[in-house]
Length: 291
Image (cartoon, rainbow, N blue to C red):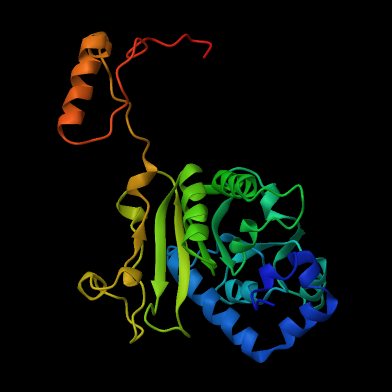
């Protein structure tokens, strides 16, 4: 059986009372959660003005990542689908407000009230159909759409995730772009199989200089420069801000739609060796609107 939790059972079933307590009591897990949360908070790039922000912790679990937010002086709201995890968070008397809910059904928060969002090892769960009624594409659409609405303009969302493959990574990216986000993927320590971590850094709003994707950390713990990352595709920051803008529709004049124009165009394509459908009486014929 695969070691990936999301491939073994739905989160509300996998993280039962036993697994939730085991997860929270592991000193190794606690250390990893603290490290990932610190990095996610760093990528949020919140203003250093001493003013506490209201942050959203998606997939907060037992509140391990929320502790990092509290230690840095911020208020936070935690969302998780596992009741067992939230029960332990209550036992540990975490500072955040906790919500039992499924992020795949959208976030029921007021528009523009959240100053930033983080998520540690949770978003990839949306790519699995755990129930017959689950459609990953619809769940990703509901999640990113509702997240975009509840974030304040210019706020960031940082997701540490473990995509199973490139197809899953592209699926998550595509629905983030459709929701209106700008940003990209940051990969820390891309050459290390043990320390390699992937973060999806998104900004609520249109692309601008302030939405530039941060640099990743290299082997020495410093930010990787463009020259160091150019030699390896995995070490590059994947930017999606340019693809966030909808393309303008090209205007085609009525003259360009005539049959002679189409035939001339097809003949030109044939001369280049391209495969072109044969000319028929239907070539360049206008379709009826009800089609």
